[in-house]
Structure formats: structure tokens, C-alpha cells
Length: 406
Image 1 (cartoon, rainbow, N blue to C red):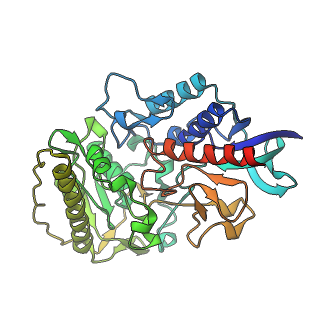
Image 2: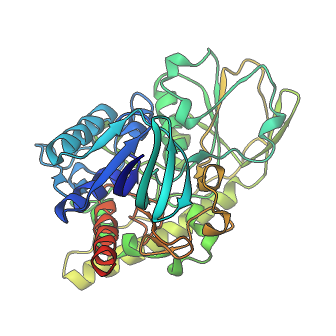
Image 3: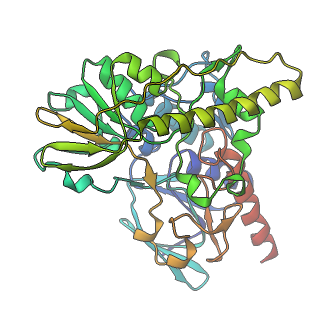
């Protein structure tokens, strides 16, 4: 059986960042990726692009160095960036190897993979911010003959059957899809939940610059109203078309039909809660919170305060039933959930929501088990292209220290 000091599971931005940091410390390791480098990005829809500016790509040893720092890389350029990063860093990555489960073994762990068993003294799981698409209660009541897909299975408007599209979920992905489907000439109904929003740019700086400067992105789980708030949507924004404002008001103005959250279907009648106005009001309140942080950051840095306009009045009237006759598809964009328990034997290593029980990326339940790239691992930016490197460095140093003291 092959033996390594450290097994890294996942060859995306987190796995490659960890590999870079481990290599810099001279630690023997291997990276296993069930698909290809950056597979999660490859699986995004055709017109997908970054929501954050290119300058925010700060992988260790692999920061963005192109000529469009304020732009938003499309999907294929993101993949190409990660491929170059893997090549130039010499990451010991093995593509097409699926890790099916991991068991404890004397001296560490045994990973059961599609290429055979592998023994590792330590394991770092870098399998993405989330792993399992979430569908709301009542989704199984939709008509069986209507195409129903998760956002990860959407590729482009032309790939859907003719007819209007119901998008369930109004986080970043749901709103981006609704906008792009509408631009493609589709009639779109968007089932809305609660999501914060903010302008794409304030003054002469991008929203992400302000979110970082204000400390918003450095907030930890302990700053949230509850652990469940980890599943809340990120502030609505888009990099599509060079980046612009995206929120429920802009979508309605573009011709998207907004409705409340999806509660189920009776025959071909989809039903929605009468809560659209409440969801918009909630998003407006979070917008005010974010703007308050940004204005305070401007004052603290001695910068001119960006102009902050009050949101326009919103008419919350919305249909509570929509006939799905003639609809082409339903796309679920209600977010994702952790899925470690479905393939790992340590149920007690994860909390009631499926997130790892850990401190600074080190499992506090399973000795020798680590995580990088998980949502809110340390802060809001833990799973982002500009935050994952910080966590990777912390985990790599922790492993080096343990190896030195062993």
C-alpha cells in the first residue's frame, strides 16, 4: 500500500493552495481529484463568471497577474488560471481518482479510492465550500413531466426545453440565472427568499474592496445571529457583462416575475408564500447594515464617503399561484449543504448542519483530520479565492508543527 505523510482530497483552489503551502514546508503529500483540476469551476454554466474582481484572486503563489484586474474572469479563464497554478507550483495532483471513504488505521488513515487504497498519516479535506445541492420542501410535488434540475446541472438557456423557466432561489446564482435567462429571451419566474444586496461599485471602488476594508469578510461564525446563518445568501452581485448591480428590483425592471418562496405544487399550479415584500424588506435592512460598515470604513481610513442612495419603493404584490402549463423547466438554486457524513464514518465530527467541528481548520474530534475551503471555516472569506490561502497556510503550519513534535 502506498504511504504519504499528507493526503489532500480535492484539486480546486483550496487543494492547490494547501499543496503549495505544504510544498513550501517540505512536507510529502499527494492531491487526489476525482475529476480534473478545478472541476467545480468546470461544472458551472457556460456564461458563468467570477462575482468578485480578478484582483481578488490571491492564491498563494498564484495571484491574478493579468491585464484586467477590475474585470471578472469567465469560467474557462478561471479553469485555465488554476491549471497554470497547478503546473507552475508542481502540485503532485492525480486527476480522475475518486476518494470513496476514509477509515482510521494504525498511524493515521486509509483512503479507499478508485485507484486502490492509500495510507496517510494526516488528511486534509478540500472538497469545496459545500457538496450537496439543496431543494426546498415541496419540490417533490412538482409535475413529474416537467424538467427539474439543480443549478449545477444548468449549462445554458438553449439547453432547456422551450417555454418559461421557474427559478427557485434568489441568492447569487439564482439571481444571475434569472437575469441571464431573461436576456436570452426567456420568460422567468423567480421564487424569492431572503438575501442581502449592495451596489456593485461605491465611489470608484468595487463592492468587494469595501467589504474587505470594512471587516465584513473577516467576520467569524461567532458574529452571526446563529450558526444557521452560515447558510444565508452572500450579498447579491454579478460580474456578468463587466459587472453591474443585481437585486430583486433590477430583476423586476428587466421583466422577471418575482414571487414569494416556493411552498409546493398542486397539479400544474405552483404555489408561493405571500412573503415577497418581507423578503425585500429583509434584504433592504441588510443593505443598510452593510452600508453602515462601509461608511464607517471610509471614515476610519480618511476616505471620501461614497454616495449611498436609499432603495426605491417596492411594490410587494405578487401572484401566489402560477400555472406551469407550457413551462420548459424548473431550476433549483436554493444553495448547497455540507455532505461529509454521506461518505465519511465520523458522524460525530460534524455538527447538526453537517459542518466540521474544528478550530482553525483542525478537527477537534478526529485527530489528524483537517479542512480547508469550507464555508465559514474561519471567516466569511474562507471558501473564496481571496481567503482560502490564509486558511491553507494556517493548516499547513499546524501540520508541520505536529510533525516536528512527533
